Structure formats: structure tokens, C-alpha cells
Image (tube, rainbow, N blue to C red; front, side):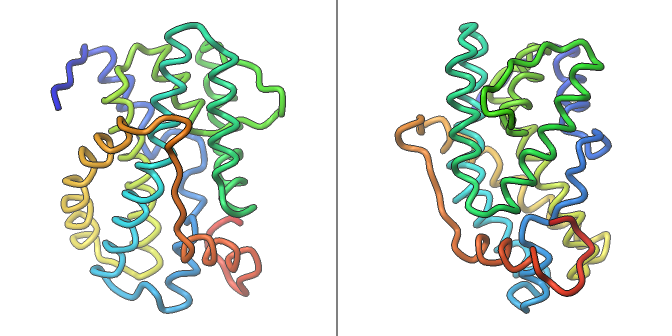
Length: 225
């Protein structure tokens, strides 16, 4: 995979994928908190397996094809098709909590982009996915699709590893080892997403959906639901 970029677009990508971006990604465990509470995830190896499955069977097969399609639609100035991708993203959230995570982060990113003078398309349903707004920012800042996809995955992965560090718990060295190991899966996920379109994308992780559902009523939580 050959990726070219300019210094300006690279800096914008670093800004967009930074954990300091005020969109609240650190507030959501996306089912991980319950998986740990239930004993499904207990250590570094189990955490890596949990995140690897989510990367290849959810992020690569839903989020990244949506990101790619939304960026292509914006490049063609087709806001109607961009909204189709937004609707697809929201329709593929398997639980109320996962949809809330997506739209809450989307609302936060929308507010931020407006303060940065980035035009955000209107959605008829009133809810906007974080993924399609990530596409808006990447398009506005002239970040190419492949690089934007890698930045999106990195942002997701860093937040998930940060959650695991608190919850498993993992040591800081273990967290860095986990990030290093999972980096090798990111190009594979991006390549997989390139072969999917709106008719062939889709994924389902039953354990993730169950964990996310149970998290809504978990007796004690560090993360939002």
C-alpha cells in the first residue's frame, strides 16, 4: 500500500486522530467494560483477541467502508449519497448503546468542525455518525482516503487500549506492546475495507452486542452508556 501526503494534511490527520480531540471517545468502552466484568477478558492476550476480532469483523467491514464511501461522495459533491452512507453507519449499530456512542461523538465532532469553519452537510434524520463526520473533516483537510482510514482506526484503537489499561488492568508497558502488535493489523483492515461497498459491507459480533446491551444496566461503571 503506497500512501502519499503533504505535511499539512499529515498534521491535520494527527489532529483529527488525536485522543485529545474533544469528541468524548475516552468516555465509551464499547462493550469492553462488561466483557471484563463478565470475565470474558482477563489479561493482555484476551484483550488483544477482543480488539483484533472487533477490528477485522466490525471496523474493517462497517466503519471503514462507510468512511471510504462518504469521502468519495463528498469528493463528487454528492451530499445525498453522503447521507446514505450516514444512514448505513447508524443502521449497522447493533445496540442502543453503540448507536449512542456513534451519535454522541458525532455531535461533538460536528460542533468542533463548525468552530474550525468546516461545512457540515445536513442530515434529514437529525443524527450524524462520527464516521461520516470524520469523512467530512478528512475531505475538507485534503487527507487521502487510505491515510484517513488508518487515522480512524488508530483513534479507535488508542481509546480502546486506554480503556483496557484502566479496566483489565494493563500496565503502561503492556499497553504499548498491545498498540505495537495491533498496528500490524491496521493495513490489513484498511485493505479489506477497500473491497466492500454499500451492498457487501456488514458485520456482526454477538458477544460485543451482548456486552454492550448488558453495560446499559451494569451495577457499576466507569464508562458512559
